[in-house]
Length: 285
Ligand code: SF4
Image 1 (cartoon, rainbow, N blue to C red):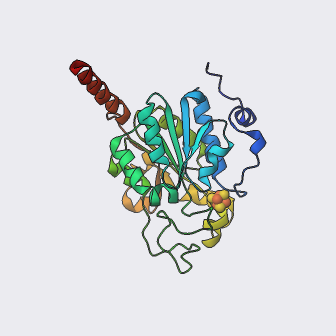
Image 2: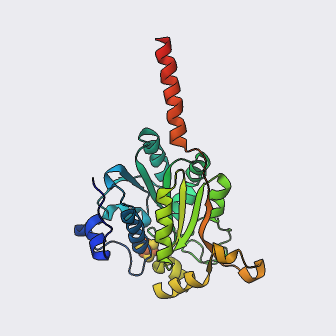
Image 3: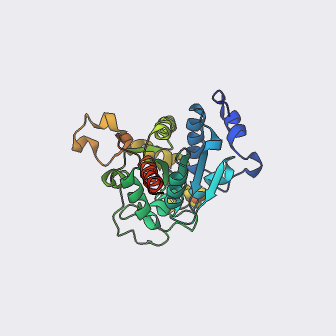
């Protein structure tokens, strides 16, 4: 399919990629997931990528609904297993672009092992995690990214666990592209998605997203607008942060591209082994 010129506006982007007849979405008013999904599609569109050569894998939960509204080939995986499905697809059809869209509970709790091993292998999957620090769809239970002391339906007196810093986890596991964006910084997030989609290897994007319905309500953070302001005030671009000392930085989270390096991609290396094995078998025949 020939690449189209980038969509001129959001209406055109919606017409091009979204299943309009399925709208409105099930997301609550003010939820960040829809904005993040539109930013992803904007990046995809700008790069002129071919949806017929792309497979999206969704997990379970509110962010696992993204693919339900897109005119894409989408696999609805089981909880925590998006990266297992995505790994199978990438190894079988390395020429495809494979995207896994997950939530924080989905990717970091039940799916945590898949996450670290996909990063370690450097398999060519774009892994997007909408981190709203709660299990939204099931009623606001605490997740592996809920802050210590934060309230949740399962932590009415405050969470006693320390949260994962997902970008640090993935970087430590060997991720070659690791980035964090927020819904507030949606233009930067779109650029991050563009770079993730162009990366050869495992590309991990954490999207700090607001869940006003549960996390915001339990933690008295106000509505969506207040939660977006929180994202603005509690983050700092990684380049600006490099000029500051630890004290000036405070507890602000780094946003931007934290790791961007090259290493052999797993599916390509795997195909080399397949070719060698076939050659040996042919020689023996
Ligand atoms: Fe979004 Fe939270 Fe509502 Fe789920 S429960 S759709 S994460 S606001």
